[in-house]
Every structure is written in structure tokens, then in C-alpha cells.
Image 1: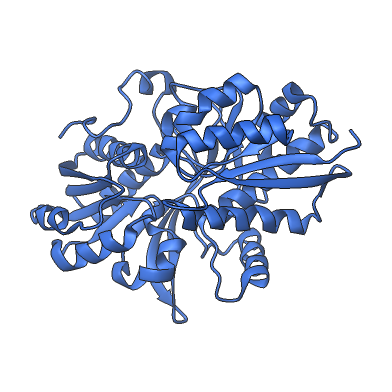
Image 2: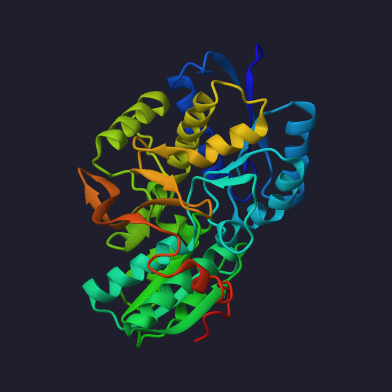
Length: 384
């Protein structure tokens, strides 16, 4: 126990996903600087690897971090598809891995893994409460949806549709587009004008093309949605295009809590006054808070992996920038979910919080056992 505590960090630093990946690295590095790279009296070493937004690369880098670098814990990645792909390898290696960003639903539902701990969010954790708020507060009864054609899009749209239709609303159209698509004009032109609103479930990747196509070719309908497509990483470049949109997330850079105000101030001090926090920076920063508390609980004995894993699952945070959080029985955070509106304040665009759902479970108000008997959300479930 005299050597350093070694943390391996994997994310997308090139290609698709790299903007959010660099934000993640900034978040974990900010946290480690604040604690002077020390936990429980031991030095902390951080090794960062680029998964190039590929499952195969992620597995290679993970094995390198464990077998060659001797890390005690892994943190990453950024994509739901990558998380689904690497989870079996994490399980086989018997090393704790923290997921600070990926929303892949079934990693904490039907396909749970003992050595995978999520400190981020489950994708459907957004859709259920947001549907409740939209139906009861905006009065929309007919919604058309557009989502990216992979797990994140399916799970956010599916969860929104389930709750929205149980309340009496109707999803009248679902369009899916590849992440690699550049021109979205035909999709936007196909959105049904008979809807009350259009719901987007997108990542921050390609968000500029989606948003600009919607304003140019889409219907003149209010825009709502969930996921990183409304994150601060998007507002930095194209916020004016989607100003007024209402979205849902577990974080907003505009939260006025003491914890988030301190986080935002320290981030600007480290990376420049024009810098903005995002769910990616906050996710990695909060993963650091989580890991620190677990390591302190085992008095720095990270070599005892079963005890470290037990400590990681027992952590509860009251000082995360996003708000209080703890794990449910399935390994997903119970945490606040925020309804936000994109507004211009003091000349800058922000996600103003207009409603808070406290202590939201990934199962919303549903019974977990009954919930998991339904099919996983997909491009075809729930059906139109």
C-alpha cells in the first residue's frame, strides 16, 4: 500500500465523440487538481486512453491499462454502444469500472454486471418524468419524435412514449437517423405538421446539423427533448438555433446550488472565463468524488478489489454539482432530474432549470420487476 493509486480513464478523444471526451478529461483532471492528486494519504496517478469511439479499441485500451499499467480502477466511456460492448470484458477481468456518462439502460436493468458501477444516468431516467411534465404542464397531446438510431435514442424516446401514452397522449411518428448522417433535411421535412410538438433524442454529435435542418425544413412547432443534444456543449456553438427549447437532464450548468456554483467557478478559473461546464465535465468530476469517498472508506486499500467494489456500491453523495445521489438496488443513481429551458441570460445562453423532480429512480414510479418484463426500448418498441 505504499505505491500510488492508479486510475485508468477511457473515453473518445478522436473521431466521433471527441468533444464530450475532452470535456470528460477536463472534469476528472479538475477534481484531481483540487485534491492535489492525493486520496487516503496515497498519491493518485491518472492514465488517459483514447478508445477512438470503438468497442474494439476500448477493450484493447482497457486490457493495456489493467495488464500493463496495473490500474486499480477504470472510469469511462462516453457511448452507450461502447459501454454495452465492453461490460462483459470488465466482468471477466474483475476490476471495478465507473460509468460516468453512458446511459445504456440495461447495464443497470436486465443485463447487470457486478463490476460495473454507474454514476451517470440511465437513458430512460430522462424520458419518464419528462413525459409526465410535458403532458401535465404543456398540454401537448400529439408528439412526433426524431432520434438517433442507437441505444441512447431508442431508450429516451421509448421511455417518453411509454409514460406519455399512459397519461393519454400519443406519439404519432418516430423517425430514426444514423449518427454518421450529415444531411437531415429529408427527416425534418417529413415531420408531421399535425403534432403539437417535436421531441428530439440526440447526442451532442451532429447536433448542429440536426438543429439547423429543423429550423430550415421542419415544422414551426415547439421543440422539446432529452439527452446530450441540448447540453452546454451544444449551446456553445448553436444555442441560438434552439433557443426556447425545453429539455430534460440530470444536470444543468445553470443550477444555482452552492455546490454547482463552486464547481462552475473553479472550472472557469482552470479553463478560462469563457468555459462552460457540461454533463460530460460534471459526470467525470462527480465520478472523482465518488471514487474518492469509496477509497477513503477502505482506508486506501485499493488492492483489495472486492472490498473496494463493495465500498463503491455503498457511496452516497450530498456534494455533487448535480445534487444528491445514491445507488438503487440495481446499481443506478437515484438523483434529481431537471426540466430546463434554453434562455439567454446576461448575453449568454443557458439551460435555465424550470422544474426539479427530486430523487428520481431509473424505474420512475413503475415496479422494477414488472418493468423489466417488458421488452427493452428499441426503434420498434413501444410501437406506433
